[in-house]
Structures are given as C-alpha cells and as structure tokens.
Image (tube, rainbow, N blue to C red):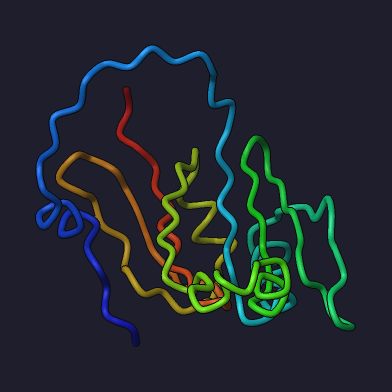
Length: 155
C-alpha cells in the first residue's frame, strides 16, 4: 500500500508570496487532468466499467491505445501512456516525463453511488468526513494516480 500524502501538508512548506492584481485579458474556460499511466487499457477499464465514464476519443500508439478522452457529465479525464508522452516531448523534456503522482479530487453528487460502482475495488482512504464537512473516499486507479471522490457539505 502506498503512503497517503495529505493535501494539507503540501501547503505547509510553500513560502508565502504576496500577489499583486494583474489585469487579465483572457478567460480560463476549463482545465482537464491528463493522467499519465504506464498503459492506458487498465485505466480505461476502471473509468469506464467501474465508474461509467464514456470514451469519446482515442489515439493509437505503437499497437496500443496511447491516449484517450473520457467524459461523465461535465467532467473530462484524459489518459496518456508514458511512451506516448515521451514521443510527444522534445528531447530536452524527455527526462522529466510526468509520473504517477497525481492526486485528483472529484466533487460528486452521490458518494454512495460511487462506492457502489467501485464494488470490491481496493480502497486506500476509507470513507471519512473531513473537518470541512466533505464525505469522501479514496482509491488508486490502475495507473497509480490517487483519486479522492468527495461529496461536499450542503451549501
């Protein structure tokens, strides 16, 4: 079992920085996680068969799936194999290929339904209620990324 890195510990070591307002002439419409995985296929089975995401695009790479886009509602996840990422990068960047250390925090409307969908899948973070009232559970998906499914407190 991998050690659980608590998100709050990430902020303790960061130096405080004073930010000044900057005029922005652009809008960020969306951000999508690209989970870099050893092989796309095992992660596809997890996201599609366990959690009901739909594959909307895929790109082959060296006889396997190198990249895939998955959707569920408004949530989009991209999966890309390490080999595909390496081939996409310039030689100068290849030594720093992203690994399997992403923590993805997914806001869900029904945590019980997610737990039911996970079935007998191994749980790394047992169900808990956080100090801020979120009901959550965490698992490592087959590519090694830690996924926290959380139902926020009623607003």
